[in-house]
Image (cartoon, rainbow, N blue to C red; front, side, top):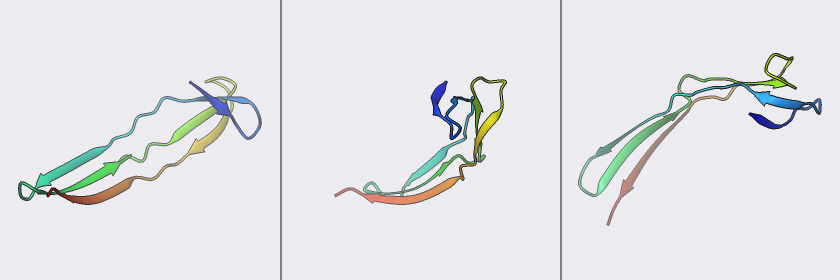
Length: 75
């Protein structure tokens, strides 16, 4: 998976990664819904290598988890 250039101007390869996302919604009434959503709950990191998979590690991304709470009402 090539994804552009690193800061050193070498081509980079992004390592495989997965993340755990979850969401729950609850119908309070027929028209009113509340919910919560979590993104990247396991805080998986992003590794990018210079030139190829077995080369120098060029970049490590450390994205945080995000939690969102919401509600909706249908008229």
